Length: 180
Image (cartoon, rainbow, N blue to C red; front, side, top):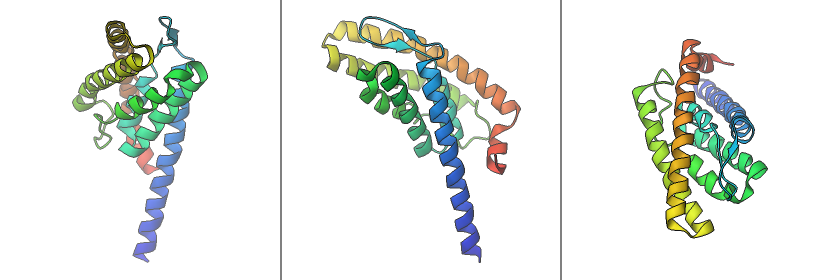
């Protein structure tokens, strides 16, 4: 009997995580592709603040689910707006979830705030390599990727803290553990 209950609890937890992953992927797609979406340069790139929802996902979901939400959401946004960037985005967005923790009682913790800085470094470096592979110019790739990532990651960090504080005030992590 105990084994059956444990299995049912595990299945319920997995289902909750899958549902939340899908919801977060959809919100990441919309926020990235359509909300505060600012095209920059001539290479199809754009600045957005969808990374803030990737950070929220990483603070709410276990790592594999957060990585899936980030890859699906970011990848779909690029497929809708700038398809040439989709392969790089899928990899980079998965990687930027790694520094965050979902094990803390709150979303906004010192670790997760510091994780936004690490996410910037991962994003800037990743897009530098992608831009270099696509266009071949080291100096313009470095300037474009690091400056664009600074604006995007910095703005996303601000939105992450604002959204995270609001979600922490309504005790979203406790509510998600108790059920939707």
